[in-house]
Image (cartoon, one colour):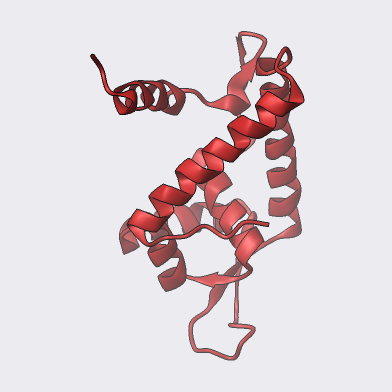
Length: 151
């Protein structure tokens, strides 16, 4: 008999292949921003300006990968480098108005897709599912020692 975690592994693998911003009634739509930009800007928005070192630690990414991602969002005008508001030496990345607007639009696209996917779910089931996802993610964050701030 398969362990319940075998089923979780399989369903998580299937979930990872989906891009919810692209799910629109079976038609493929282009996302407004790359997935890495979406995650990076989401973190900066909730935590505030962050240095390369802080971002590297938060995401567990090496410097070259992080530099590519921050360079891309900066070139696109979605984030900007600013002096450390706390007076430190390292410059920090801050989300721009353009980045915030695009992030809001992308998040709304994802929520609309989730609304379509879960349109026949009772609100209680959606809330329970969200609670399980939060618990699952919190467990990963605990093991990796990389907590994600939550509103």
